[in-house]
Figure 1: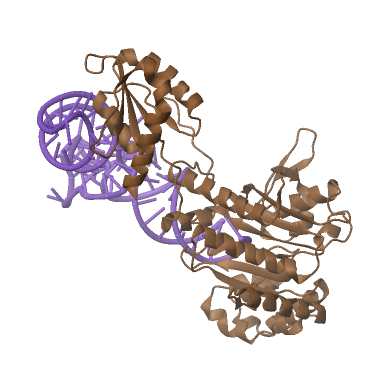
Figure 2 (figure 1 turned 60 degrees about the vertical axis):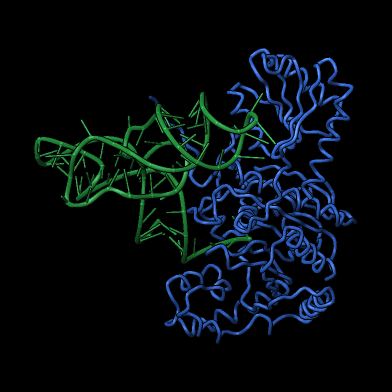
Length: 434
RNA sequence: GUGGGUGUAGCUCAGUUGGUAGAGCGCUGGAUUGUGGCUCCAGUUGUCGAGGGUUCAAAUCCCUUCACUCACCCCA
């Protein structure tokens, strides 16, 4: 026996309940976004490596050690996208979409990061991203938060906490960063190993530490919110007013920073305590400088991304997935001789009553086991097609889960009666169910 | 990259102080039932994650390795 080929670590097959949850989530998100007038954009999975280096930040962990990077046959360095914003911004610039116009876009698909897998974190994971270009004022920041809240409501998700913060302008943030480093240098002896490393790479992230021993140091640190530039301060205050207006509760988290370099001003996260360590289910913010940084004209921009696997896990845990509708009709074939006409008749039903879903039993099985399958499928009625001694070339409509039959008729009579019989059957079934 | 836990049937797992494997679910067939739901009977599948070692004998003890999983880190 040859060695079994397995999937790549951290890249999972989704089937059954999970696949259903995935599709349900994406479809629902899409429908909400369409409701808000956002348009779909489909983007490549592979981009030039330089794009991510320039946008995400050269010294982030993502770029330094988590990207799937390889050489194309012509020697270009390419990378499987580790996130969606960079590619979206590139596409918007390249296609002139931000030229004196506003774009409200959404996309979904796989992202790739070489990380050690754990709950809610995989090497191939999926995001649903939303990006808006060309709007500077805070009402769009608010709309993004509001529409995400509506999505949670549509999905039936409760207990998601909204955390907000402002990073200020690039300049204010830089100035604050210097101030923070100065403070932390003075308290270097109290810092843990991770924080000492971050002091070099990304000092703002020290504020976000999970180490309780660091609480005192972090609490004593200067707050970014106290060092915002005036415009950002006003922008942030307005955001809170908008959120109050629509009645969306939020928590101000002064330690909420971003792993990606390009954010400024508004940042927000929807978090849950029900998923273990990976509690952020949706995160985003403003990135006004990024378009220019990647080579476009200065264009304000704001967006967010949802982690599909994490939301899926919540939906499944709470049994919130709206399942695919059961078939209306399950075709039971009594005897070998019924197989051939079975296909013909099931197609005739689909032609005649295209709104019905018809599942045909294929591959045989005993009469009894076919009924078991019919029952399991959740179908409303079983259409029994028989050519054996019992059925004698008759069609029988049987109500599943009820002690009711049945309209026997010859095959040749099927089509004229089909509509009437089914409609009556389905109607009565529906009525009895209520 | 670091640390903990776990690998036995398609799934969930049991397997006592070492004696070459079991249950439930599922699946298949049958009995009963109003040709399906409940009940009952029968059948079905394993290189016990992989490689090596100790032993008369290893799922069980030792070493190595791989995979899964949780946490750190990172992040959606």
